[in-house]
View (spheres, helix red, strand yellow):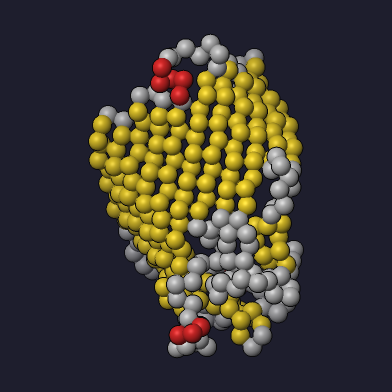
Length: 273
């Protein structure tokens, strides 16, 4: 049985009729899950003394709309994650335990603008919406619990990047609307990541650790609504059929590198009632 108090506080201040400044702070708690108590590979060892994780999150930002042509949300965040559960190597085998404390901080923004509506409300030839979502993230360890190297400054993991945390995620796109038809094109760019807390550059023999390069993927989708309640959707994900990797696995379906999806096409029809 666990008993603890979690609290949070949030505030919002209107700057104009449709824009506001906001701020939030909240404690967080994450119990050990069943999946973390289950070995993901035959050689993995689970620490019998795994502790629950905790931390806090704070964010601050400015958001709103300007007339009918611009909407935005720009904010900064700070996340403290204590008693993170991760994997380190002991005696040549992966050992899952509480590896330390990480801090993630950064800036996130979203902006969408309709350039046609700046000048006119007429949509005779359709309307275009341009959007951009950008995240700049600094996620690093500030405390490391590995007893084998905690007192060795040449092997310290402090200030190492958190595994699978890219430094930037960018998405840019445009949507064209005309009556019941819409078409969207999006370009996504994701930065490189390390797949272990030690920030190992070169992959090992089994491919379970090692740096993964960033990648760029293009997607396109189309929607047509007709007879008020029907819609037809189609699209292509990874339009250029880019070869990239998203993560590494120590067990099933690995061990090894996990590739991203290649070019994928989809078509669907739906209705509402």
